[in-house]
Length: 153
Image (tube, rainbow, N blue to C red; front, side, top):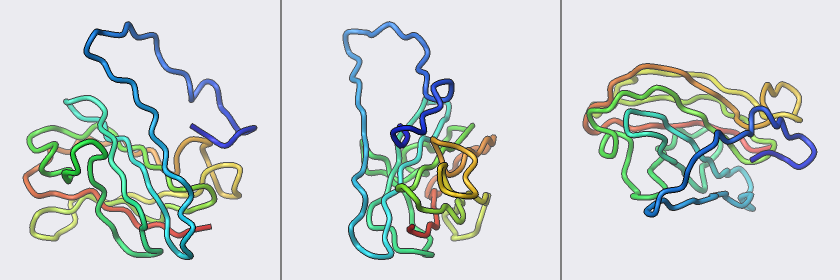
């Protein structure tokens, strides 16, 4: 999803898919966080299990915050243990900036780090969809966490 009037139809297209009897189609959004210096964040994590939605609410500006599964509430290392992460797409609320995204090991050390940006139409943005698109190939161990640091508009 993107801001009305700033839609990149090529980036937003959904490939043809035949619905199965046990499929559930969900569209999930967070409302803009009304509290000053806090944001809501959604990430789509692609692994051998498919695409999993992760998120966090009330993320305090410039504070590294763990994202959890929107379905199960589990962290990345518990839900995707043994899987290889192939990509992470992260979106902050409108006008927000993704400063940093990281994968932390169970011992607290940093396994991987990436740097994001704004979304269009905000100056400095590079995408109408995400604040960062991070291709990778990282096998996940038990207890690892996906964390982000953001700044509100």
